[in-house]
Length: 524
Image (cartoon, rainbow, N blue to C red; front, side):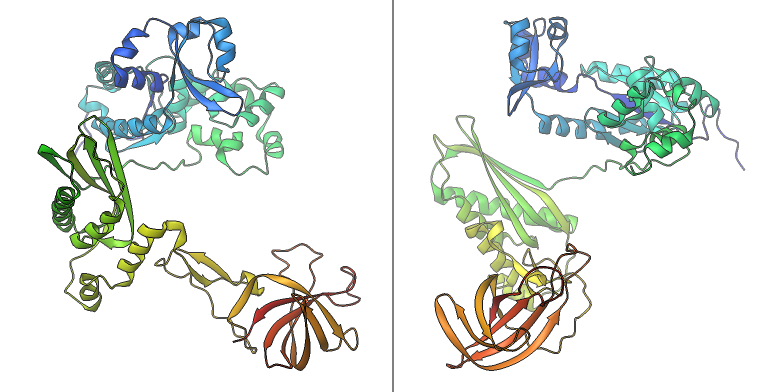
Protein backbone atom coordinates (compact mmCIF):
# COMPACT_ATOMS: atom_id res chain seq x y z
CA UNK A 1 0.00 0.00 0.00
CA UNK A 2 1.40 3.38 -1.04
CA UNK A 3 2.09 6.00 1.57
CA UNK A 4 -0.21 9.00 1.85
CA UNK A 5 1.36 12.20 0.46
CA UNK A 6 2.40 14.77 3.02
CA UNK A 7 -0.24 17.35 3.75
CA UNK A 8 -3.18 15.25 2.52
CA UNK A 9 -6.03 15.17 5.04
CA UNK A 10 -8.11 12.03 5.37
CA UNK A 11 -11.13 13.90 6.81
CA UNK A 12 -13.57 15.84 4.72
CA UNK A 13 -12.73 19.49 4.11
CA UNK A 14 -15.28 22.04 2.91
CA UNK A 15 -14.45 25.53 1.65
CA UNK A 16 -17.16 28.13 2.22
CA UNK A 17 -17.01 31.33 0.17
CA UNK A 18 -19.31 34.20 1.15
CA UNK A 19 -19.84 37.17 -1.14
CA UNK A 20 -21.35 39.77 1.24
CA UNK A 21 -21.61 42.42 -1.50
CA UNK A 22 -22.63 40.14 -4.38
CA UNK A 23 -25.46 42.31 -5.72
CA UNK A 24 -23.47 45.52 -5.43
CA UNK A 25 -20.31 44.02 -6.94
CA UNK A 26 -22.23 42.60 -9.89
CA UNK A 27 -23.99 45.92 -10.45
CA UNK A 28 -20.62 47.68 -10.52
CA UNK A 29 -19.15 45.20 -12.98
CA UNK A 30 -22.18 45.19 -15.27
CA UNK A 31 -22.93 48.90 -15.40
CA UNK A 32 -19.39 50.20 -15.82
CA UNK A 33 -19.50 53.99 -16.14
CA UNK A 34 -22.59 54.55 -14.05
CA UNK A 35 -21.24 52.38 -11.25
CA UNK A 36 -17.91 54.23 -11.34
CA UNK A 37 -19.76 57.53 -11.02
CA UNK A 38 -21.53 56.43 -7.81
CA UNK A 39 -18.74 54.27 -6.41
CA UNK A 40 -17.65 56.92 -3.90
CA UNK A 41 -21.15 58.28 -3.25
CA UNK A 42 -24.17 56.74 -1.49
CA UNK A 43 -25.69 54.11 -3.78
CA UNK A 44 -28.40 51.51 -3.06
CA UNK A 45 -30.31 48.80 -4.91
CA UNK A 46 -34.07 48.79 -4.39
CA UNK A 47 -37.04 46.47 -4.91
CA UNK A 48 -40.68 47.56 -5.22
CA UNK A 49 -43.00 46.32 -2.48
CA UNK A 50 -46.61 46.94 -1.55
CA UNK A 51 -45.68 49.91 0.65
CA UNK A 52 -43.05 51.36 -1.68
CA UNK A 53 -39.41 50.75 -2.67
CA UNK A 54 -37.28 48.90 -0.14
CA UNK A 55 -33.49 48.73 0.15
CA UNK A 56 -31.92 45.40 -0.91
CA UNK A 57 -28.20 46.29 -1.01
CA UNK A 58 -26.04 49.29 -0.01
CA UNK A 59 -22.48 50.39 -0.69
CA UNK A 60 -20.12 51.69 1.98
CA UNK A 61 -21.03 55.35 1.50
CA UNK A 62 -24.75 54.57 1.80
CA UNK A 63 -24.14 52.47 4.90
CA UNK A 64 -22.18 55.34 6.45
CA UNK A 65 -25.12 57.63 5.71
CA UNK A 66 -27.44 55.33 7.68
CA UNK A 67 -28.90 53.11 4.94
CA UNK A 68 -29.53 49.50 5.97
CA UNK A 69 -30.89 46.58 4.00
CA UNK A 70 -34.63 46.29 4.55
CA UNK A 71 -35.28 50.01 5.11
CA UNK A 72 -37.86 51.86 3.05
CA UNK A 73 -36.39 54.18 0.43
CA UNK A 74 -38.43 57.11 1.79
CA UNK A 75 -36.75 56.73 5.18
CA UNK A 76 -33.31 56.57 3.59
CA UNK A 77 -33.94 59.70 1.53
CA UNK A 78 -34.83 61.53 4.72
CA UNK A 79 -31.33 60.70 6.00
CA UNK A 80 -29.52 61.23 2.69
CA UNK A 81 -31.46 63.11 -0.02
CA UNK A 82 -28.61 62.74 -2.55
CA UNK A 83 -28.63 58.94 -2.50
CA UNK A 84 -28.55 57.25 -5.94
CA UNK A 85 -30.75 54.21 -6.61
CA UNK A 86 -30.95 51.38 -9.12
CA UNK A 87 -33.33 48.38 -9.33
CA UNK A 88 -32.06 45.13 -7.87
CA UNK A 89 -31.92 41.99 -10.01
CA UNK A 90 -32.19 38.79 -7.90
CA UNK A 91 -32.49 36.58 -10.99
CA UNK A 92 -29.33 38.10 -12.46
CA UNK A 93 -27.52 37.64 -9.15
CA UNK A 94 -28.47 33.96 -9.07
CA UNK A 95 -27.35 33.51 -12.70
CA UNK A 96 -24.01 35.16 -11.86
CA UNK A 97 -23.65 32.95 -8.77
CA UNK A 98 -24.26 29.83 -10.87
CA UNK A 99 -21.42 30.83 -13.20
CA UNK A 100 -19.16 31.37 -10.20
CA UNK A 101 -20.12 27.92 -8.88
CA UNK A 102 -18.65 26.36 -12.03
CA UNK A 103 -15.60 28.63 -11.94
CA UNK A 104 -14.68 27.75 -8.32
CA UNK A 105 -14.35 24.07 -9.22
CA UNK A 106 -10.69 24.88 -9.89
CA UNK A 107 -10.23 24.36 -6.13
CA UNK A 108 -12.20 21.11 -5.78
CA UNK A 109 -13.95 18.32 -7.66
CA UNK A 110 -17.44 19.70 -7.01
CA UNK A 111 -19.17 22.82 -5.75
CA UNK A 112 -22.65 23.74 -4.51
CA UNK A 113 -24.72 26.89 -4.34
CA UNK A 114 -25.28 28.52 -0.96
CA UNK A 115 -28.17 30.78 -1.96
CA UNK A 116 -28.40 33.73 -2.00
CA UNK A 117 -24.77 34.85 -1.79
CA UNK A 118 -22.41 31.95 -1.09
CA UNK A 119 -20.64 28.93 -2.50
CA UNK A 120 -19.42 25.64 -1.04
CA UNK A 121 -16.48 23.70 -2.48
CA UNK A 122 -15.28 20.23 -1.49
CA UNK A 123 -11.50 20.61 -1.10
CA UNK A 124 -10.85 17.22 0.49
CA UNK A 125 -7.34 15.98 -0.40
CA UNK A 126 -6.74 19.12 -2.47
CA UNK A 127 -4.82 21.64 -0.26
CA UNK A 128 -1.48 19.86 -0.66
CA UNK A 129 -1.57 20.79 -4.37
CA UNK A 130 -1.43 24.46 -3.32
CA UNK A 131 1.06 23.99 -0.50
CA UNK A 132 -1.47 23.70 2.32
CA UNK A 133 -4.83 25.13 3.28
CA UNK A 134 -3.45 28.59 4.03
CA UNK A 135 -1.94 28.83 0.56
CA UNK A 136 -5.21 27.58 -0.92
CA UNK A 137 -7.13 30.36 0.85
CA UNK A 138 -4.57 32.89 -0.39
CA UNK A 139 -5.16 31.69 -3.93
CA UNK A 140 -8.94 31.97 -3.46
CA UNK A 141 -8.70 35.55 -2.23
CA UNK A 142 -6.30 36.55 -5.02
CA UNK A 143 -8.52 35.00 -7.72
CA UNK A 144 -11.64 36.80 -6.49
CA UNK A 145 -9.70 40.06 -6.08
CA UNK A 146 -8.72 39.88 -9.75
CA UNK A 147 -12.43 39.67 -10.56
CA UNK A 148 -13.05 42.63 -8.23
CA UNK A 149 -15.32 40.62 -5.94
CA UNK A 150 -15.36 40.95 -2.14
CA UNK A 151 -15.36 37.65 -0.25
CA UNK A 152 -14.86 35.99 3.12
CA UNK A 153 -13.77 32.35 3.14
CA UNK A 154 -13.17 29.56 5.64
CA UNK A 155 -12.27 25.85 5.59
CA UNK A 156 -13.75 23.32 8.02
CA UNK A 157 -14.72 19.63 8.20
CA UNK A 158 -18.44 20.34 7.69
CA UNK A 159 -20.38 22.71 5.48
CA UNK A 160 -22.18 24.22 8.46
CA UNK A 161 -18.97 25.00 10.34
CA UNK A 162 -17.33 26.46 7.24
CA UNK A 163 -20.40 28.64 6.64
CA UNK A 164 -20.49 29.83 10.25
CA UNK A 165 -16.80 30.75 10.27
CA UNK A 166 -17.01 32.54 6.92
CA UNK A 167 -19.94 34.66 8.11
CA UNK A 168 -19.15 35.23 11.79
CA UNK A 169 -15.61 33.99 12.45
CA UNK A 170 -12.22 35.58 11.83
CA UNK A 171 -11.12 36.22 8.26
CA UNK A 172 -9.49 33.24 6.50
CA UNK A 173 -10.45 30.86 9.29
CA UNK A 174 -9.25 27.24 9.18
CA UNK A 175 -10.93 24.82 11.60
CA UNK A 176 -9.56 21.38 12.34
CA UNK A 177 -11.73 18.43 13.35
CA UNK A 178 -13.03 17.08 16.68
CA UNK A 179 -12.63 19.38 19.69
CA UNK A 180 -11.39 22.27 17.56
CA UNK A 181 -14.86 22.65 16.04
CA UNK A 182 -16.60 23.15 19.38
CA UNK A 183 -13.95 25.61 20.56
CA UNK A 184 -14.17 27.60 17.33
CA UNK A 185 -17.96 27.74 17.42
CA UNK A 186 -18.47 28.48 21.12
CA UNK A 187 -18.20 32.28 20.83
CA UNK A 188 -20.17 32.62 17.60
CA UNK A 189 -23.73 34.07 17.69
CA UNK A 190 -26.71 31.75 17.37
CA UNK A 191 -27.31 33.21 13.90
CA UNK A 192 -24.39 30.99 12.78
CA UNK A 193 -26.79 28.04 12.97
CA UNK A 194 -28.57 29.20 9.75
CA UNK A 195 -31.98 29.24 11.44
CA UNK A 196 -35.20 30.99 10.49
CA UNK A 197 -35.68 34.45 11.93
CA UNK A 198 -38.56 33.41 14.21
CA UNK A 199 -36.43 30.63 15.72
CA UNK A 200 -33.57 33.07 16.36
CA UNK A 201 -36.03 35.37 18.11
CA UNK A 202 -37.15 32.53 20.39
CA UNK A 203 -33.55 31.66 21.28
CA UNK A 204 -32.72 35.26 22.11
CA UNK A 205 -35.80 35.50 24.34
CA UNK A 206 -34.53 32.42 26.15
CA UNK A 207 -31.26 34.25 26.76
CA UNK A 208 -29.25 32.16 24.28
CA UNK A 209 -27.03 34.49 22.28
CA UNK A 210 -23.92 32.31 21.72
CA UNK A 211 -23.55 28.76 20.47
CA UNK A 212 -21.63 27.77 23.57
CA UNK A 213 -24.62 28.71 25.73
CA UNK A 214 -26.87 26.14 24.04
CA UNK A 215 -24.88 23.25 25.50
CA UNK A 216 -25.36 24.64 29.04
CA UNK A 217 -29.13 24.06 29.12
CA UNK A 218 -29.13 20.50 27.82
CA UNK A 219 -30.55 18.90 24.69
CA UNK A 220 -33.77 17.73 26.35
CA UNK A 221 -34.97 21.27 27.09
CA UNK A 222 -34.38 22.39 23.50
CA UNK A 223 -35.92 19.20 22.13
CA UNK A 224 -39.12 19.78 24.09
CA UNK A 225 -39.29 23.34 22.81
CA UNK A 226 -38.76 22.48 19.12
CA UNK A 227 -39.90 18.83 18.96
CA UNK A 228 -42.55 19.53 16.30
CA UNK A 229 -40.14 21.24 13.90
CA UNK A 230 -38.64 18.83 11.38
CA UNK A 231 -36.99 21.34 9.05
CA UNK A 232 -33.27 21.90 9.80
CA UNK A 233 -33.74 25.67 9.53
CA UNK A 234 -36.39 25.52 12.27
CA UNK A 235 -34.68 23.14 14.72
CA UNK A 236 -31.50 24.31 16.52
CA UNK A 237 -30.48 20.76 17.48
CA UNK A 238 -30.47 19.53 13.87
CA UNK A 239 -28.38 22.50 12.76
CA UNK A 240 -25.98 22.06 15.69
CA UNK A 241 -25.53 18.37 14.90
CA UNK A 242 -24.85 19.27 11.26
CA UNK A 243 -22.22 21.77 12.34
CA UNK A 244 -20.48 19.16 14.50
CA UNK A 245 -20.74 16.41 11.87
CA UNK A 246 -23.08 14.20 13.89
CA UNK A 247 -25.85 14.42 11.25
CA UNK A 248 -25.08 14.45 7.50
CA UNK A 249 -26.06 17.54 5.55
CA UNK A 250 -26.97 16.76 1.93
CA UNK A 251 -25.60 19.17 -0.67
CA UNK A 252 -26.61 19.46 -4.32
CA UNK A 253 -23.51 19.72 -6.54
CA UNK A 254 -23.51 22.09 -9.49
CA UNK A 255 -23.02 20.17 -12.74
CA UNK A 256 -22.17 22.36 -15.74
CA UNK A 257 -24.12 21.55 -18.87
CA UNK A 258 -23.33 22.53 -22.41
CA UNK A 259 -26.48 24.12 -23.81
CA UNK A 260 -26.85 23.57 -27.58
CA UNK A 261 -26.63 26.98 -29.26
CA UNK A 262 -26.35 28.09 -32.89
CA UNK A 263 -26.33 31.59 -34.34
CA UNK A 264 -26.04 33.57 -37.57
CA UNK A 265 -24.35 36.97 -37.89
CA UNK A 266 -25.65 38.57 -41.07
CA UNK A 267 -23.52 40.64 -43.43
CA UNK A 268 -26.50 42.86 -44.21
CA UNK A 269 -29.47 43.42 -41.87
CA UNK A 270 -32.72 41.83 -43.02
CA UNK A 271 -36.19 43.36 -42.83
CA UNK A 272 -38.40 41.04 -44.89
CA UNK A 273 -40.23 37.99 -43.59
CA UNK A 274 -39.11 35.71 -46.42
CA UNK A 275 -35.44 36.25 -45.60
CA UNK A 276 -36.13 35.82 -41.88
CA UNK A 277 -37.81 32.44 -42.49
CA UNK A 278 -34.81 31.30 -44.54
CA UNK A 279 -32.37 32.18 -41.75
CA UNK A 280 -34.57 30.46 -39.14
CA UNK A 281 -34.65 27.34 -41.32
CA UNK A 282 -30.84 27.36 -41.49
CA UNK A 283 -30.63 27.70 -37.69
CA UNK A 284 -33.07 24.81 -37.27
CA UNK A 285 -30.89 22.62 -39.48
CA UNK A 286 -27.80 23.55 -37.46
CA UNK A 287 -29.60 22.90 -34.18
CA UNK A 288 -30.81 19.49 -35.42
CA UNK A 289 -27.24 18.46 -36.27
CA UNK A 290 -25.95 19.71 -32.91
CA UNK A 291 -28.66 17.87 -30.98
CA UNK A 292 -28.14 14.69 -33.00
CA UNK A 293 -24.43 14.78 -32.24
CA UNK A 294 -25.18 14.97 -28.49
CA UNK A 295 -27.92 12.34 -28.65
CA UNK A 296 -30.53 14.80 -27.41
CA UNK A 297 -33.81 16.38 -28.44
CA UNK A 298 -35.07 19.87 -27.65
CA UNK A 299 -38.01 20.44 -25.30
CA UNK A 300 -37.62 24.21 -25.09
CA UNK A 301 -36.14 26.51 -27.75
CA UNK A 302 -35.37 30.22 -27.49
CA UNK A 303 -34.88 32.32 -30.62
CA UNK A 304 -33.20 35.70 -30.09
CA UNK A 305 -33.24 38.39 -32.79
CA UNK A 306 -30.78 41.31 -32.43
CA UNK A 307 -31.98 44.46 -34.17
CA UNK A 308 -29.72 47.20 -35.51
CA UNK A 309 -30.97 49.65 -32.85
CA UNK A 310 -29.78 47.29 -30.08
CA UNK A 311 -33.17 45.86 -29.07
CA UNK A 312 -33.35 42.10 -28.63
CA UNK A 313 -36.59 40.25 -29.42
CA UNK A 314 -36.97 36.76 -27.94
CA UNK A 315 -39.48 34.09 -28.92
CA UNK A 316 -39.78 30.82 -26.97
CA UNK A 317 -41.23 27.42 -27.79
CA UNK A 318 -41.89 24.48 -25.47
CA UNK A 319 -42.57 21.13 -27.11
CA UNK A 320 -44.70 18.31 -25.76
CA UNK A 321 -41.95 15.79 -26.55
CA UNK A 322 -38.25 16.05 -27.34
CA UNK A 323 -37.64 16.68 -31.03
CA UNK A 324 -34.87 17.59 -33.43
CA UNK A 325 -36.93 17.74 -36.62
CA UNK A 326 -35.99 21.05 -38.31
CA UNK A 327 -39.20 21.21 -40.35
CA UNK A 328 -41.31 20.86 -37.22
CA UNK A 329 -39.29 23.59 -35.47
CA UNK A 330 -39.69 25.96 -38.43
CA UNK A 331 -43.46 25.39 -38.56
CA UNK A 332 -43.83 26.23 -34.89
CA UNK A 333 -41.69 29.37 -35.08
CA UNK A 334 -43.59 30.55 -38.17
CA UNK A 335 -46.59 31.39 -35.96
CA UNK A 336 -44.48 33.18 -33.33
CA UNK A 337 -42.75 35.44 -35.89
CA UNK A 338 -45.89 37.04 -37.34
CA UNK A 339 -45.72 40.04 -35.00
CA UNK A 340 -41.96 40.68 -35.27
CA UNK A 341 -41.05 44.31 -35.90
CA UNK A 342 -37.68 44.31 -37.66
CA UNK A 343 -37.23 48.07 -37.28
CA UNK A 344 -34.15 49.12 -39.26
CA UNK A 345 -33.21 45.47 -39.72
CA UNK A 346 -32.12 42.32 -37.87
CA UNK A 347 -28.38 41.72 -37.87
CA UNK A 348 -28.01 38.55 -35.76
CA UNK A 349 -30.15 35.53 -34.82
CA UNK A 350 -29.40 33.00 -32.11
CA UNK A 351 -31.24 29.73 -31.39
CA UNK A 352 -30.70 28.06 -28.01
CA UNK A 353 -32.08 24.80 -26.59
CA UNK A 354 -32.52 25.76 -22.93
CA UNK A 355 -34.14 22.38 -22.16
CA UNK A 356 -33.00 19.18 -23.85
CA UNK A 357 -33.62 15.51 -23.11
CA UNK A 358 -31.83 12.33 -24.22
CA UNK A 359 -33.11 11.15 -27.58
CA UNK A 360 -31.42 8.12 -29.03
CA UNK A 361 -31.08 7.47 -32.73
CA UNK A 362 -33.74 5.01 -33.86
CA UNK A 363 -34.77 3.37 -37.07
CA UNK A 364 -37.69 5.03 -38.82
CA UNK A 365 -41.07 3.76 -37.63
CA UNK A 366 -44.72 4.61 -38.07
CA UNK A 367 -44.62 7.49 -35.59
CA UNK A 368 -41.55 9.00 -37.26
CA UNK A 369 -43.23 8.70 -40.65
CA UNK A 370 -46.38 10.43 -39.44
CA UNK A 371 -44.33 13.13 -37.75
CA UNK A 372 -42.54 13.86 -41.04
CA UNK A 373 -46.00 14.57 -42.50
CA UNK A 374 -46.96 16.67 -39.49
CA UNK A 375 -49.72 14.34 -38.28
CA UNK A 376 -48.22 12.82 -35.13
CA UNK A 377 -49.80 13.45 -31.72
CA UNK A 378 -46.78 15.36 -30.40
CA UNK A 379 -46.72 17.59 -33.50
CA UNK A 380 -50.45 18.24 -33.15
CA UNK A 381 -50.06 19.18 -29.47
CA UNK A 382 -47.18 21.52 -30.28
CA UNK A 383 -49.21 23.32 -32.96
CA UNK A 384 -52.21 23.73 -30.66
CA UNK A 385 -49.96 24.98 -27.85
CA UNK A 386 -48.36 27.60 -30.07
CA UNK A 387 -51.73 28.87 -31.27
CA UNK A 388 -53.80 28.61 -28.06
CA UNK A 389 -51.24 28.72 -25.26
CA UNK A 390 -49.81 26.08 -22.94
CA UNK A 391 -52.65 26.38 -20.41
CA UNK A 392 -55.33 25.65 -23.03
CA UNK A 393 -54.13 22.10 -23.85
CA UNK A 394 -54.66 19.40 -21.23
CA UNK A 395 -56.34 16.05 -20.78
CA UNK A 396 -58.19 14.32 -17.92
CA UNK A 397 -56.56 11.39 -16.12
CA UNK A 398 -57.97 9.12 -13.38
CA UNK A 399 -57.50 10.13 -9.77
CA UNK A 400 -58.01 7.95 -6.71
CA UNK A 401 -61.33 9.11 -5.26
CA UNK A 402 -64.82 7.68 -4.74
CA UNK A 403 -66.46 11.10 -5.17
CA UNK A 404 -67.31 11.49 -8.90
CA UNK A 405 -66.20 15.13 -9.27
CA UNK A 406 -62.84 14.26 -7.73
CA UNK A 407 -62.19 11.11 -9.73
CA UNK A 408 -60.09 12.90 -12.36
CA UNK A 409 -57.37 15.51 -12.69
CA UNK A 410 -56.14 17.61 -15.62
CA UNK A 411 -52.52 17.38 -16.75
CA UNK A 412 -50.37 18.15 -19.83
CA UNK A 413 -51.50 16.05 -22.80
CA UNK A 414 -48.45 13.80 -23.16
CA UNK A 415 -47.49 13.41 -19.50
CA UNK A 416 -47.70 9.72 -18.46
CA UNK A 417 -50.79 8.81 -16.46
CA UNK A 418 -50.29 8.12 -12.73
CA UNK A 419 -50.22 4.45 -11.76
CA UNK A 420 -53.54 3.77 -10.03
CA UNK A 421 -55.19 0.52 -9.05
CA UNK A 422 -58.20 -0.06 -11.26
CA UNK A 423 -61.45 0.56 -9.40
CA UNK A 424 -64.22 -1.94 -9.91
CA UNK A 425 -67.81 -0.69 -9.96
CA UNK A 426 -71.11 -2.52 -10.42
CA UNK A 427 -72.92 0.54 -11.73
CA UNK A 428 -72.76 2.32 -15.07
CA UNK A 429 -71.64 5.92 -14.66
CA UNK A 430 -72.70 8.68 -17.09
CA UNK A 431 -70.09 10.00 -19.50
CA UNK A 432 -71.32 13.58 -19.13
CA UNK A 433 -70.98 15.22 -15.71
CA UNK A 434 -71.90 18.78 -14.83
CA UNK A 435 -69.04 21.00 -13.76
CA UNK A 436 -70.84 21.52 -10.45
CA UNK A 437 -73.81 19.44 -9.21
CA UNK A 438 -77.01 21.51 -9.48
CA UNK A 439 -79.59 21.51 -6.72
CA UNK A 440 -83.04 20.19 -7.67
CA UNK A 441 -86.42 19.90 -5.97
CA UNK A 442 -87.61 16.27 -5.64
CA UNK A 443 -90.97 14.80 -4.61
CA UNK A 444 -90.84 11.30 -3.21
CA UNK A 445 -93.43 9.09 -1.51
CA UNK A 446 -91.54 8.46 1.75
CA UNK A 447 -88.39 10.03 3.23
CA UNK A 448 -86.35 7.04 2.05
CA UNK A 449 -88.42 6.16 -1.04
CA UNK A 450 -87.74 6.55 -4.74
CA UNK A 451 -88.11 10.02 -6.28
CA UNK A 452 -91.42 10.48 -8.13
CA UNK A 453 -90.99 13.94 -9.68
CA UNK A 454 -88.23 16.61 -9.78
CA UNK A 455 -87.78 20.18 -10.95
CA UNK A 456 -84.55 21.17 -12.73
CA UNK A 457 -83.84 24.49 -14.48
CA UNK A 458 -87.50 25.52 -14.28
CA UNK A 459 -88.96 22.34 -15.79
CA UNK A 460 -90.82 19.53 -14.01
CA UNK A 461 -89.91 15.97 -14.98
CA UNK A 462 -92.05 12.94 -14.18
CA UNK A 463 -89.98 9.91 -13.21
CA UNK A 464 -90.84 6.76 -15.20
CA UNK A 465 -88.06 4.40 -14.11
CA UNK A 466 -85.61 4.36 -11.21
CA UNK A 467 -82.50 2.31 -10.40
CA UNK A 468 -80.58 2.55 -7.15
CA UNK A 469 -79.53 3.64 -4.73
CA UNK A 470 -75.74 3.48 -4.96
CA UNK A 471 -74.37 4.77 -1.66
CA UNK A 472 -71.03 6.61 -1.57
CA UNK A 473 -69.74 7.32 1.92
CA UNK A 474 -67.70 10.46 2.68
CA UNK A 475 -63.91 10.28 2.30
CA UNK A 476 -63.03 10.75 5.95
CA UNK A 477 -59.34 11.28 5.16
CA UNK A 478 -60.14 14.33 3.01
CA UNK A 479 -63.32 15.80 4.50
CA UNK A 480 -64.49 17.06 7.85
CA UNK A 481 -66.48 14.93 10.26
CA UNK A 482 -69.77 16.57 9.27
CA UNK A 483 -69.69 15.35 5.66
CA UNK A 484 -72.81 13.37 4.63
CA UNK A 485 -73.28 10.23 2.58
CA UNK A 486 -74.65 10.27 -0.96
CA UNK A 487 -77.32 7.97 -2.43
CA UNK A 488 -77.14 8.00 -6.25
CA UNK A 489 -80.12 7.12 -8.51
CA UNK A 490 -80.29 6.53 -12.27
CA UNK A 491 -83.68 7.79 -13.36
CA UNK A 492 -85.59 8.11 -16.65
CA UNK A 493 -88.39 10.62 -17.24
CA UNK A 494 -91.57 10.19 -19.29
CA UNK A 495 -89.77 11.38 -22.47
CA UNK A 496 -86.98 8.81 -22.21
CA UNK A 497 -84.27 11.21 -20.98
CA UNK A 498 -82.02 9.75 -18.33
CA UNK A 499 -80.35 11.55 -15.43
CA UNK A 500 -77.97 10.83 -12.57
CA UNK A 501 -79.13 12.40 -9.31
CA UNK A 502 -78.18 11.90 -5.69
CA UNK A 503 -79.56 12.59 -2.25
CA UNK A 504 -77.04 14.29 0.07
CA UNK A 505 -77.59 12.94 3.56
CA UNK A 506 -79.89 10.49 5.30
CA UNK A 507 -82.69 11.44 7.64
CA UNK A 508 -81.57 10.84 11.19
CA UNK A 509 -77.85 10.68 10.45
CA UNK A 510 -77.23 13.51 12.92
CA UNK A 511 -75.26 15.56 10.40
CA UNK A 512 -77.74 18.24 9.42
CA UNK A 513 -81.37 18.83 8.53
CA UNK A 514 -83.44 17.24 5.76
CA UNK A 515 -81.43 15.80 2.85
CA UNK A 516 -80.88 17.86 -0.29
CA UNK A 517 -81.10 16.55 -3.86
CA UNK A 518 -78.67 17.30 -6.69
CA UNK A 519 -78.40 16.46 -10.39
CA UNK A 520 -74.83 15.63 -11.39
CA UNK A 521 -74.80 13.76 -14.71
CA UNK A 522 -76.63 13.03 -17.95
CA UNK A 523 -76.77 9.74 -19.82
CA UNK A 524 -76.45 9.78 -23.61
